[in-house]
Length: 176
Image (cartoon, rainbow, N blue to C red; front, side, top):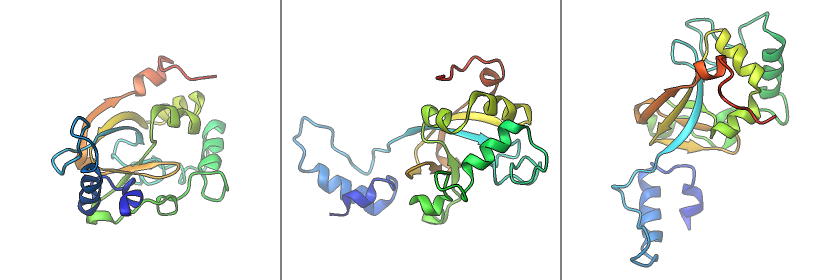
């Protein structure tokens, strides 16, 4: 059954068909998945003023790979996220994500607020905001989930909440 292969591609037409066929076996009292139902998920996104991410932004030089001198917290973060680090953040294509799916532009995000807090310390988040990055909680309809990250299309964003002020003012509690 192709259903297992569809778990990361919830908006792919063939996967929706497969999930709908699987749902046909569910009793009537249960929710039945159809093509008309779109699932949403909430993700955490870090981006520069140009809308590009930590390692992709080049219009405003807000790109962690371009900085020669970074605060120690961000050097540590860059090393933790490095693809050279065996426990680091892999490139999306090595995390089971298809950046060419549907010929759309896909953007990286953390899978949840808890996931964000595992990958980014409070001090690192404050340093990022201090450099001009913004941290958003976004709800999206079109996404793919990898083992360590998510990707989404900006056209599918239905809600975008800026968390940067809360981070800067230490109002977003971190588990310590």
